[in-house]
Length: 332
Ligand code: PMV
Image 1: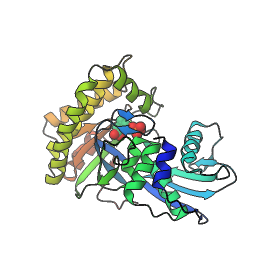
Image 2: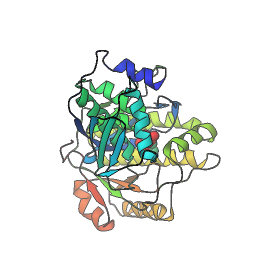
Image 3: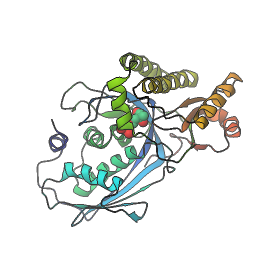
Image 4: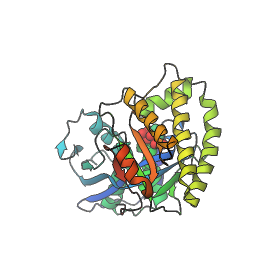
């Protein structure tokens, strides 16, 4: 199945009547158990399930209205049609372009710190799907919205939900069973600390990094079984609000993902000297008794996992940290 057919399958058949505009917000998310590797690159179908936490108020806000041609603006700045971001949005909108005259003006803004490696595409595509749903009054169930967001970017499937979210890998070829849903759990004292170490664009995008790893890394064969174990541990740790168990599993999962990339040919290495120094600092603090753990995505920045009771000590050790309490703030 092609992405356009998948989208068509999920959308109502009746002619769409548009409201003047649709607006929506979607949170960024950080994976505690990562999505790394596609079984179908066109439909963004993953090899394994993954589990994330949505970042409350931090994310994207998008407004969409019908227009004569696609126009995309980011943080108030209209983009040239050749701009890579505008081109990616327009290519995604093709999934909804049932007749050639359909086109849209899309205004999107992001509260995610720029270059924070926070998969801004995840909240961006999720907010865009939610805004389209409002524009046309489809009132699609979350499951369908998640599948549609997945067609834009895999991790976007998780950004349609607040809280802890599991994206089920599914097994169908058409991907209709590969969607995310919220776990029935919260954790008010849970904190995520964002450490932005570099704002320079990463040399290799996650799509290319993922594809190279699955195609060439001798360690990738071990990844699916590891994920199955980590998922189990992370689900239990969330249920029991057990930070050390969660932190150990999430950190091991992130490092295992990076190990698979480092073993790719040519290697994919997102870490910088600052990433390494920060990782070592986290481990030194933990050896001193501070319950703080780390996770990293396809970039050099580090995210810390801890609880409110340790927040003062964590902030003291990492003064540049931006703190998020995913269950403290209301998700948009
Ligand atoms: O959704 P993508 O294609 O940007 O890939 C995201 C990959 C990671 O951020 C590294 C892991 C994840 O699960 O979010």
